[in-house]
Length: 285
Image (cartoon, rainbow, N blue to C red; front, top):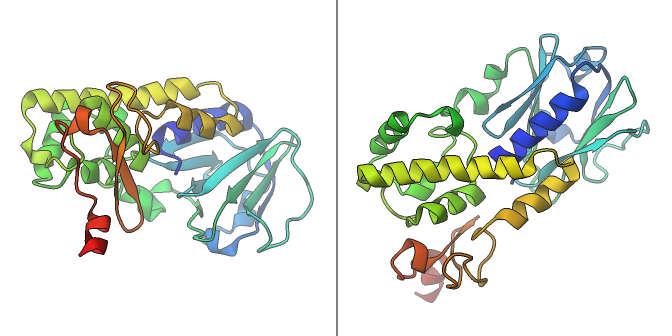
């Protein structure tokens, strides 16, 4: 799933290439992706793009008071073309959910792999009309250490992994970067949020900011098609079950859940103690 660093890079990419251009076409080809109907998607045609913003994992393309807001979900992506195809895309055929064409012939497709189809497109007059945006917590890059400390203390015994992933608590961090942040901080994903000392709070805060900023910096200037591979190559533990931890050389382990999993290093994060894989434990009962 694209998270804060990838969406930030897409924001910068589109700001550099699309601002000042007008929509010539905006065609929805996956009806399930369009979540709003007023204004209609056709209202974008003829409007000049004046800015591009990011809200958590949401991408907001602003065009003269109308906003095209995109959430790529788990399997969505944006594919930019300097010379966009002007051919009609048959609804329900292939991975394309939205095709746009701009007045200089460039444009982008929104695509979604798999069968879950959770990619979401909104056309609104105010980004706050999008439910997911209105519920967002603060952005990690705007949080002070004091605010971060207050947020974690209010979470009680909720595990750190869950706190970092909760978009209503802190916006933009997902499954991958929460694993990475906790590995950098050398903390267990199951550690209760309210159990951190002042030193641990500072360590986690610094790990969050540095991990996300490093990912943003590594993606700067890359073409859209290279962002996914850059994210994967930069991950230390997430998605690397069975591989060696780059810090200590121990084997990266995994805990599986119903619809996701987390990866961690026992030596770096849990004092050498493996965490219980709860899904496997249930199967063995």
